[in-house]
Image (cartoon, rainbow, N blue to C red; front, side):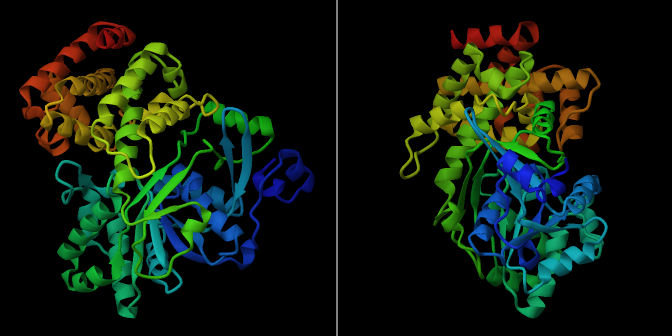
Length: 487
């Protein structure tokens, strides 16, 4: 039964014990524009906003924006489903089924860019949020600079009336807001350390190059609070389809996520904002200690077992954690990475690591290993290299070896896909494949690219360690190599 019909059927609502929106959606207004209405947004920010609206803050609904033509399916289904979708919060012992209705409208930016620009520029809009993934920032992780030569960025510089990137849309809208003197808060909700600071710097450089006359107003009237977001949200899988089918719910936008969710947000707004703290958002002067911990332990921890798990033929994250030798490696990696993580106030790092292992091991999510392996060209530099660089600088040579094994695993993962003439699931697939082919099978040559990896390739001793583990992974079963690493 389709979700838009279920919500009108009291018997189905009772049978499924559905939690429905508790506000009149017809009377609600949208003051938030969200760019990138993907799975994580629907499992995270949209849920917090529904909590706010359920509590009476019904002016803070969301207008979603899709920028890419391949999102047409999402646009069509949202319209078909009256902008409703299902979220199953699935723990190891119990689950909750919610219908989320905080997204009030969807605009396809690739078809009607003017509608997106006008909505962002509207006086009703107070906040723009975004989840466009690392790839949507069009930046070099090693230099934190914009990819000026990227075709999408070049297009937006020369054809401002039909933008393709967030920068082009925001520039056009900010010019209109300047004319009305309407400040704007822009919140990145992507898994990038210092996401607000980074997006501010990238947006500012775009403004400075394309529309320098806007810069003075921009600096005084646009804010970019940093945020740390956390909720494991697996990609669509057969397990998810079977779960929805078992409940009798037909919802192609439906999502399964873990019960845990966290949003830490800096209190840096230039205009009105909802009472985020009332629904559990942690408001702070600085998210850095929290994101530092999350990126270097959760995100890096995921990657540390993802590539090795895939090489071992284990298809799910919980399956990796349930494999004793991999559980030992994860504990070892978290111990090494933890050397670079000061505990935020009120956080016990050992307890945090223990919760991470428990979350990774949730079998009801059936989180696919390949989801964790995608976009390695952004994740390796973003999640692992900062800790690795600190460990090298601090002389923690022993602790760097677990990182060497992970980097070797990513190289072999890439090599296997490229040599099989298969497509890498990576926004930088072309670059990564080119580097892999040029390396002639040698991991240390692969890591010489300074645009992606900075100065890492100049560390001869560490490169030798990566080569050692890469050769082992090419010659032996991955679990045997991990066992040898653990001694």
